[in-house]
Amino acid sequence: MSRYFLPLSVFVVMAVFLGIGLTLDPKEVPSPFIGKPAPEFSLPRLDNPQANISPADMKGQVWLLNVWATWCVSCRAEHPTLVSFSRQNQLPIVGLNYKDDNGEARRWLQRLGNPYYANAVDADGRVAIDWGVYGAPETFVIDKKGIIRYKQIGPVTPQALSDTLLPLIEKLKGEAA
Image (cartoon, rainbow, N blue to C red; front, side):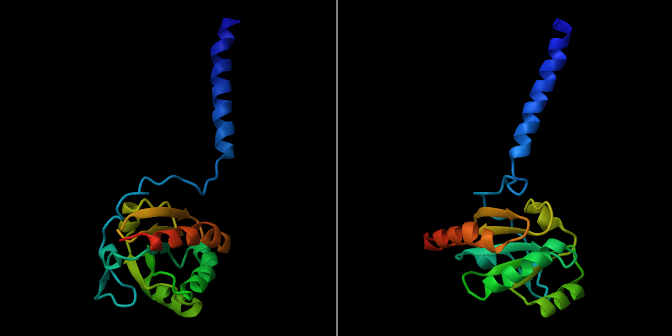
């Protein structure tokens, strides 16, 4: 009887962990960057490679960083939501064009609309790694002090925008810089 106790105990523990894991939402991966300063970068702009964009350019305002690429199917799905949201002029959206072809990215934005205040070209993906990006699309909400306050994994949907992002954005806009 005692020789079955250890394997049975291991099985029960594994079953409990599996049960807990199955209840979790895979889009809610905790980010170690929440509440910390946004990682610095200075990258060429997609529209003007001689000029750079960095988080320092956005200090003093609430803004979004949206990681996207033309090869990303989910990015195409979220794009109309971002275009519609950008027309409301609530805050600047900075794009981080991730491991993409610059010409294709410019054509994509011309065809589908450009919701971005500016686009940083992350050709080798190193900046995305610094931001803890798992894959495109991902969107970060950064406050007036340059602190990351939220990370959306996966596409920004109208529901995510109205239920999560907009209430947070309004709250952050009301805070002192």
